Length: 319
Ligand SMILES: [Fe+2]
Ligand SMILES: [Fe+2]
Image (cartoon, rainbow, N blue to C red; front, side, top):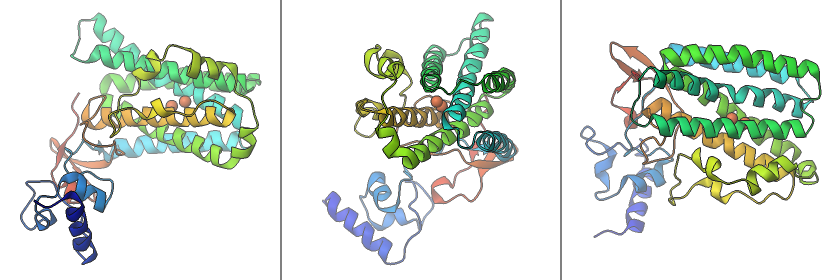
């Protein structure tokens, strides 16, 4: 029986001989690269060919028209806020975190109302607890920004709170008609949030390492019962644990922003799974991937530019 090491070596040889097409899942059409190294597992192929795990079931795509609308909304809003708050990072983060809580409150509001009218589905309680934990996490991001002086201007507070009011009703209406569309909007926002904080940490690392930890951050990340923080960690890492359990201790403001950035990544993962699998934990076989746009034809949605991994058409989410 061939060892894992020798199979990986064989895969590398196959790849280096020019057969660089991505692998396909078992049961794919004849002629697939899959058959070239018998016995190789999906994980071994993925290790050689990249992060995409072809053994995982494909998730739903997002109707390209909704995808473009969500992208346009997020891009325009983020662009406007970035331009308005250039050079005022904590005020910018205060505005963004005021908005960040809103969609989770909107999901909960719609789900709560549905519960009231007897529309109860398996898994709803767990989903509501997770959305509450996400809202609580965003609240603490907001409190940290306020402790840093981000809300010191009445103009900024008025702008952020006005935007939050209208954003709540927008998400509530969208979520009432299409949960995937509403979740996809947040998926894009959380991706932007992760990148925003990642850039900030890279650009201001030395300065942040010389700044103290706000007490509210110490309370939330160190002293509070971790139940709510664990509740929004829905995607298990490959070692069976969660990334957030290995967060760095808080020695400076730098570590606080690393925690916040990583929280945004956790929210993004959960949202990818909700859009693509209508499930908090996704298919549990691989790391979440960004939702891709697809073209609707009848009841099916075909992902554009699909590789062999995504050769099968996937159904449009119908909830
Ligand atoms: Fe946040
Ligand atoms: Fe967020």
